[in-house]
Image (cartoon, rainbow, N blue to C red; front, top):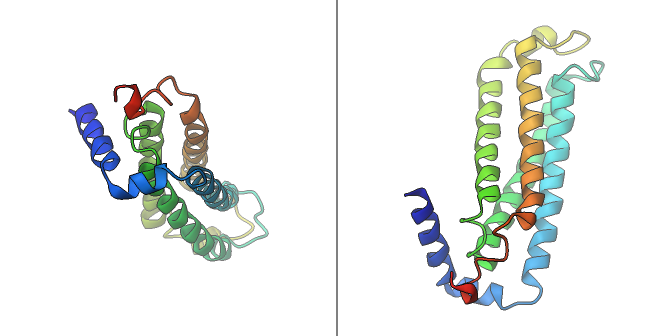
Length: 176
């Protein structure tokens, strides 16, 4: 059922006039890819700095100040990465929805988001007690480590999409 839905999504996007416009442009894919790489790189860099701080590295820097500074930039970069990722669907709609590595990337993003939500909602409530010079609680460090692993998985999957066995094999001209 999931595979059928993803194929339906691909077909629906492939029939979209925006897809025709973007997929016929020589520059659309490279421009969108550059924007996507720059924005997810900015986001991931910010998350790494924040996660390393929550792991206890750099305890002379306030965790709260680090979060306030980095999260504003990270949210903006994440929004642009999501937008450019959506544009990828319109540039090559026959590729992404049916690609297993892409599907894993989306799952990892959801899991990373849930981990971040849980950390901010439950684990950081007592941040005033350990903000500086004290090792963050184990539960915060575990969540930060999980965050690092999940976001590294997202980046790895993003790069591996082009090397997956089905990439380039789903073009409509190939019997999509």
